Image (cartoon, rainbow, N blue to C red; front, top):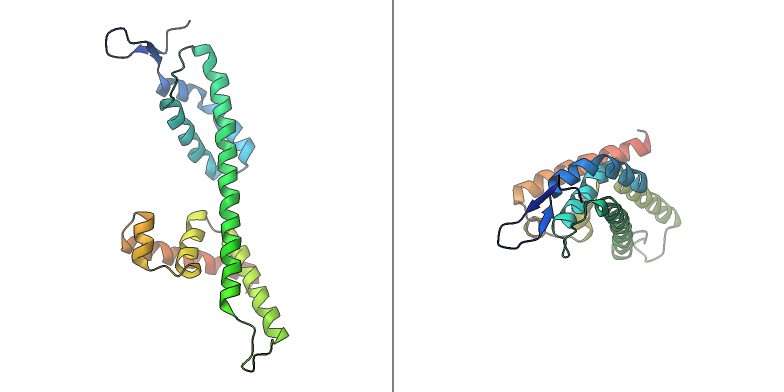
Length: 191
């Protein structure tokens, strides 16, 4: 067994453990390539690699054989890439549900007499589709805060509590998210 990356933990008779900081740095290039290939989203790579590092450090059954590190890390990469893709799919589904709730709750497209106006229904439907497409283009954090504020009708204080940030941060994030949504809609409409 190669002991270059093995340290003994303090305490009498403690089993040697691997130096995970060094091993993760050593394996980072190929892990980054695999995550990028599996996700196709460069912005997600660092998030997934952080999850892998946490899993490596917090493992329940310590891995002691350095020869097994590569295959074990590869399995972690595959599992965490899959989890990330699944979480993104869930988020897209939640956005669809929010959009459907908004349409159902809105009651738009009905004239004063209670009769449906087909032109209004068509225009509002088209506007919702454009807005939904623009929301999907936004970074997930922006889409999330917009949906909480306008889809779920949460107050600034509730959003701040939920996200663990200050109300002033909620205000500035909402402002930036609205600006990005406005720009995405402008690009879509080509005005």
